[in-house]
Image 1 (cartoon, rainbow, N blue to C red):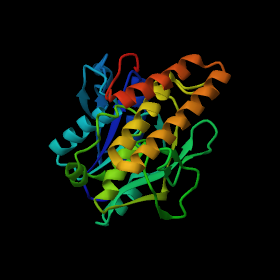
Image 2: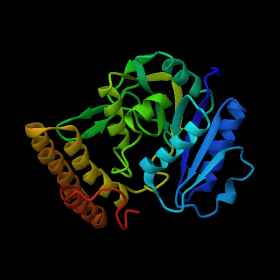
Image 3: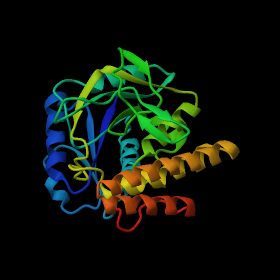
Length: 292
């Protein structure tokens, strides 16, 4: 490992077993070379993490991905960390994936680095080079980076950056609560003049949908926040005609998604999309009752 002081920030929400497995594997690979910060959202039994050699931030409420990560950032600043790596607790890895991220962040023009993420069940590519469509505020990532390549955005599942940059831009926007907060953070980093890159050398696996139990389709939580946060992103990042265009087209995309859910008899998820759109236009941000 590089001598740069690095911390991995992991969010836990009602899944201590996955978090403990993740911590254990990190310690097996890195021993004491990194700090591990666990943010325990809506904490039920923080004693579960005792003896796991990590710094635990206990939240009595669920502060979502955005708020939880910001709490982790505050702890990293307290520990004088230079680089943070946000990592989902339902990930697995067999080799050093942090060093390639830290090495690239030693280049001052680079503001964020992502890796190559595969699904745990099928070992198919889940995230490589991030792309997004400004018309629909929709995202895609189906290309493995050839070595190191520029990327439009980086998923919060594996996102490394320097603390000084997070302090400069103010961390995650907590209005998102969950979903698209990583697209927003990526966009703000780029607007400060930094480059975002993805590297093939940093490889992990991800149990997609594991946190929300999405085994048969999208959860109502994802349906709600994605639909609502597309509206939020358009309101924040576009002006005048481009804002109107994006609000209309992203809403149409969400409605098409909702129709498809209805056809597949996933009525609760479709209702969540409608509520998300309504709340988005009404300006209801942050955590909303029932989600989750």
